[in-house]
Length: 127
Image (tube, rainbow, N blue to C red; front, side, top):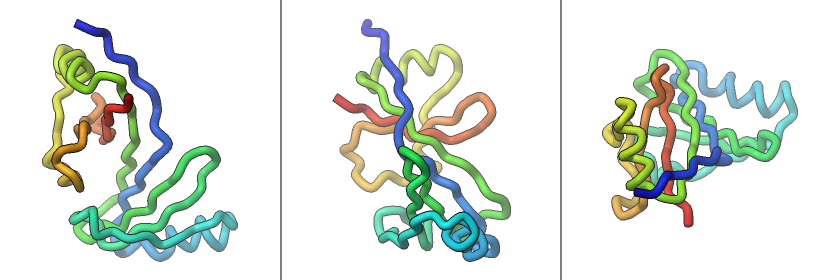
């Protein structure tokens, strides 16, 4: 079996309760002066609004989630072999949790996982 390689992705998603969303967008746009753009959310059924923020080499996604009571941070990982990576992670008790948010395209080679602290990561295969 191949040993999977993991690399950090460029996307970070901050899931924000509706009551805190506008103030959070204003913080990045007005207080910090970052370039903030509203984007389409039709692909994400659990997100009611989203804004993208250039955050150094990363994109920080500010996602409004109407039923959240506190913010949550989601990260992105890449692997060269999703099957081997999933097997390797399962050996230490990390299993896919794809139910957290439906994926846009069920044919994509991705899984949602949680690290031991419960932080969600999108694990995507890249070739």
